[in-house]
Length: 271
Picture 1 (cartoon, rainbow, N blue to C red):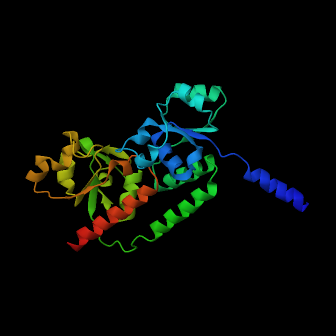
Picture 2 (picture 1 turned 90 degrees about the vertical axis):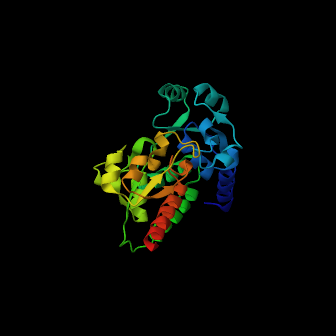
Picture 3 (picture 1 turned 90 degrees about the horizontal axis):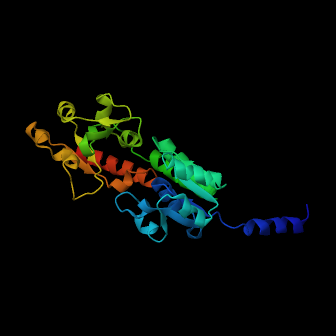
């Protein structure tokens, strides 16, 4: 193979235009913002600008948005459209019908699934090595967590209406990595379910982990951790607040949550 041919091949590769990408899913928005170059992003979902749900909402506001309608996406002429598992089926069908390349981002129900999603989006936007490097960093952060977890206090995810997460969920695994026992698991909840006030009083968790979507505007459903019944029962659990934009979708911020919960556990142990 001649040197001229090798140099020509390199020039062709260097001149390959970047992949143009559009997203109609909030969780995909976050990973596109994280992994794609600015000039690649044609559009993000409207929710990407929402401070409560979008981790990169400030960065997202530099880009145009869409409401998930096929007509909006078609005018952008993207090379790839990233949709969610539950994106509008009519939109998805129409985009496929006209020949656009669609990629579906599944809901991440485990830490491994979060990492898989990062790698897949990195590949879809043409930056596989960028994704692999990020995943290596995140795995190292997990390895760096305190190995001695002799003290494993009991905690419960306690979202509006007592909604909670068991061990077969991202938030359940987050608790495990951070060294907490999960009250939902003791109540027989494997993935998602509801912890009643009676269950909380019976289990007596050391901490309640809440992530209200609109902090400061608590509805009755969002104020479960302040319910008079808990106070009357003599419970005084530590309340750990996590911004909702760190729990709605999975990404590198998920590992920030693990470290935050570990720090809260260590603080509780030292009191």
